[in-house]
Length: 329
Image (spheres, rainbow, N blue to C red):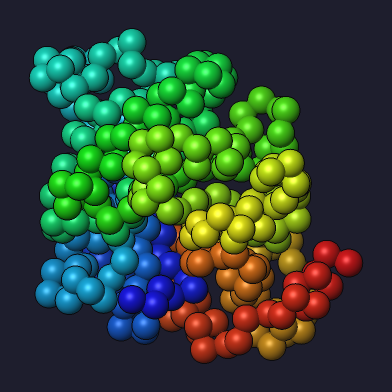
């Protein structure tokens, strides 16, 4: 399948039936318009985003959608006056032996093999799929400061080994890491993620034919580090994350491509028109999807009208290198 350069994200929105229906309609409209990449997470809108996509996928050919989800954050349930969150955690995770309080970082994040296996099964059921195209560890760098580098990469090793097992079991086709700060942080600073070291861990977990193949991080006109900042070292050479991904054969999803619409108010008048586009959202997405090394630019689209506006860029050629460089002087 050739993946669309724009993907539908499902992070924002109320935890309501109306928002669920709107997401389902938006996902179907996106597919009808030629989009085929859908991204979600176990904790997005309390699990409702996965279920809304699952409803959208009913009746669609499986080979026409590429679906990624994430596990790491504890997906808190809707408020229940009969059961407080601590009692819920004990019932759902501690009693079955899936997760203990000691496994948590900051009270909300975990990536032990048993927890990942549990969340993957829930995600597959919610999405109505037998196999996921992509399973991300969700913001794993959240554990770096707590564990320290050596223990952190040991935990990543255990998680990657589990993911190789999920591939062998036919539950996922590939895995990756969906990050926020990790790949945008320079080497030597707290929270930095090293792609070279992650690849070493993957080779130990799955051999030369490992299935660690995807990266996700923010990239937009206000957060251009993946495109501009040399935050990675490969064989001693400094590279941007996108350059390092290309050099190592990794595919890249970008998140926050329009920064939850906040960036749109910061664009100068006439910016979209100068790029041959009609709206600020289209201009922002055009920058992100055009950066060399980006496979798919993800954008939250919870309304069919947002889909109609954004998918128009799929018919427009990407910006060339000189046009991209001119955006930053």
